[in-house]
Length: 352
Image (cartoon, rainbow, N blue to C red; front, side):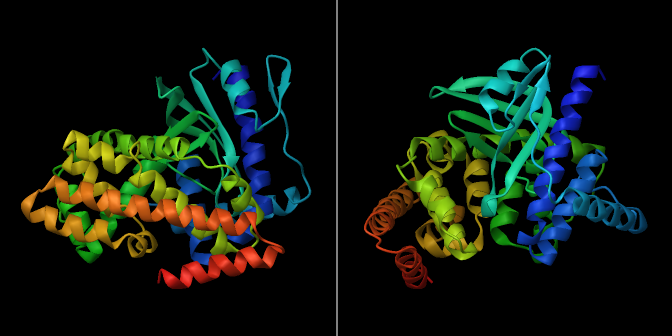
């Protein structure tokens, strides 16, 4: 490893650790343990299905928590690249500076406004809709928050390592619960619940992970194309977890059902695998908000009538646009901060 690469990795790792030291308390106990496990596996370059020695990871967690206590009052550091310093959130400029190094850098704010950073090997880059798409593979630095996709302005970052972990978790759900949507989704790629992990499984799982990166890509593109004035300001302005999750979910669903989103692309491409994973990967909270998608997919499994999916997508999209406008109006007309939170709570209750 050359000196420049090692220096950048150390700097990004430091900022990741500072972010974790400040924000680990936002996680539930279960969520924190799962995130720590993922971080441990990433730092040790382990596959999602690798066995972990309980004593080793327990010691590692204790050391990490002790290190966090040392970092609680530290600030993020600039990245020094060839003698020039860069603000750690200046993603566009930093990736320009890293051009030719085979690396890709991402930074932004994740769930509960947690600062998030990563540095990885660059698999490929491309352009679509005037957006630059970076596909990241092996990761050298990351924090507890781990999303398979993110965007900053018109730069989109697709991360194969977190995506592979997400798909493995869903495969474990299939093995444990015999979820029909997951069963259909994985069957499109030649997997069954009773399949064992061997060399062929690992090869096919890598292929599926790459294919599924398109779902994440078009979700992020949908978010960019459906961007709405003041929405980010609203998300950053609310101070309750429920309100933030609700606003983020509305934006996610608008992206999924957008003309630029993954559902529309799956329909246009007649991609049953992509469609089934769009539905199967949807969180339970999302399904409550757009039941038409779930119902249409249940019929699709038997008759493969794509028009049902398109009709459901359009219906849900129109409803979400109306909901987005109602939320925006409430934010614009608020007299006090609590007025907006109260409106969000009312809308949440109506959708349960």
